[in-house]
Amino acid sequence: MPEWSLALVVLFAVLVGASIPVLYQAAATLRAARRTFEASGPRLERALDSTAAAAAKLDAVASQLAEGKRLEQALEAVGSVGRAAAQLHDAVRVAAAVGAAVGPAVGAAVKAFREDRGGSPPPRDEAPDGKETTP
Image 1 (tube, rainbow, N blue to C red):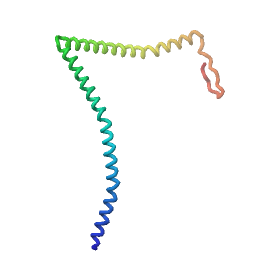
Image 2: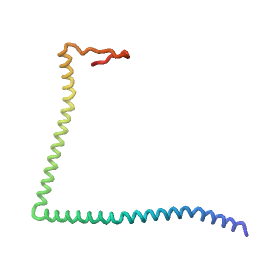
Image 3: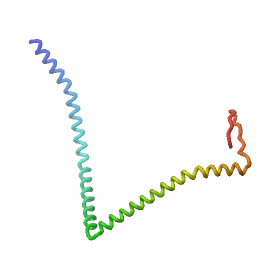
Image 4: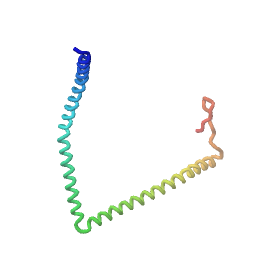
């Protein structure tokens, strides 16, 4: 037997030996995928049925709104709600800015009032480690 044919047989054996675990893993993966698809099939059907029912309800609502000027009235109502929300947002921003500006001033006034009322700042106590603390 020539040397090249022996090398060919050895190479074929290595390829077969390496492909067996790959084929086994591929089969296991396909089995798991099939189980997943079988389990998710009914759930997907229910989801599609729910989606179709929701679309039918939306169609019914749209047809009701399309009659007359109900659609225009509904859009105007939505627009007015949006404008009211924007005004509320602006008012909250202004109130937050005022609070941020006035808060430190009120705190400083309260502190000054307390110090002024007592005549002198509160006494400082000395901690066991030698550092001063305020009550």
